[in-house]
Length: 113
Length: 118
Image (cartoon, rainbow over all chains, first blue to last red):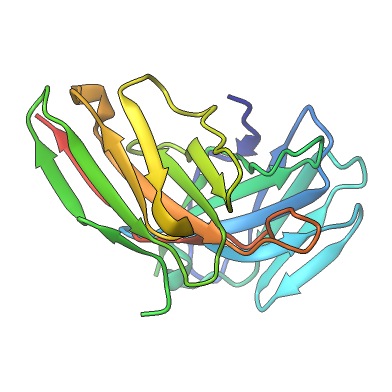
């Protein structure tokens, strides 16, 4: 099925560094979502974006809805060990009765204390 | 608890056997999704239930996979004649549905069932 291009696939950083990851799509989305999955758990929503150009923060996390509606990025500032996990982007169009989310393959983040 | 629960948490089965995976969504959530996540991979959509509407089965990989949702609450995903490639974590998520009929964006996930087919 359709998937988003999410990059990078994995990152290994030092504690305190900033992190940036992004997702791109060939389709226009009306919603962009960022989730985090801890080991052995289901994904948890971090940030939801609904408007082109929208910039939203949640603590040390900042995400933006690209102006073209075909991309989004997530930044994490001053990373800490508990930021470790897999970060997924997901997008949704509202064409017809489409309710499904389209998911990226994830960015695996490792933080070295 | 108030979250989505799934059972069993782990299931080991022999090739060719049938398995049933259960999902208890958050009370009041009318939308329910099943996903499959292979090791190191993203989420693969399987099936979507919304109220009394016909489920969206477009993601089911073969006719060995089926799911039902009884009474608009608990859902069971059944895999018949399991194959080794069915080994994965099966995640269930539920969400509210707005008055407009579209699910809200926050899908609440259960912890998943890890299925291993020997």
